[in-house]
Length: 200
Image (tube, rainbow, N blue to C red; front, side, top):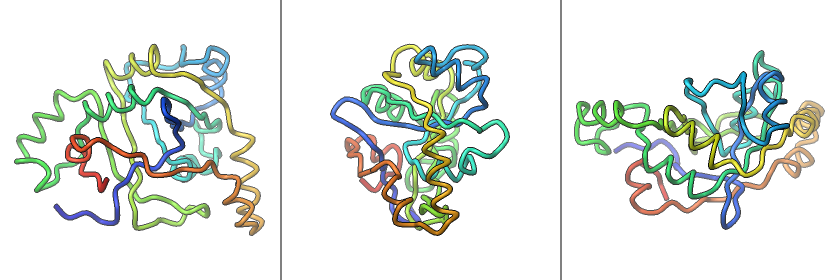
């Protein structure tokens, strides 16, 4: 299997929780903050993507400037839930050497409620890096578990996002780097490393 860069889950985590990020419009984000979890008009029947990488979330949302992504949420979920998602995941793309065959991958994909993608990690200025960051897409049963059981704390960190973005734009790179939430290697069990093609 050919791997471009290293594939590690890097995240801010404790013994029991891991922080993931999502970006939504105010009409979804603000009720979620008030309720401590996602409520209407959030739609459970759509795939929802969680991202442990703060910098990748900034790339995806354009520092909370893209339409429909104006509020960035930091969501603490249980590590048990996060690892359940990974254990029930299928990569979004077929990879020779990781999957026995393309048909085997398609079969796994059709029965898995979770998708995983490895996309280029980003620097604080959002330049792409060689290493890969994980994105986890939840659907069906996984969304219900996420909303009803896994979420422990949900915070709107948009003011922090805007402050870091301003430092980046002003060339204050050291200050911006220091304000980014610290993320370190999240150790995956061997079975998950094999399932996801992770470097460790």
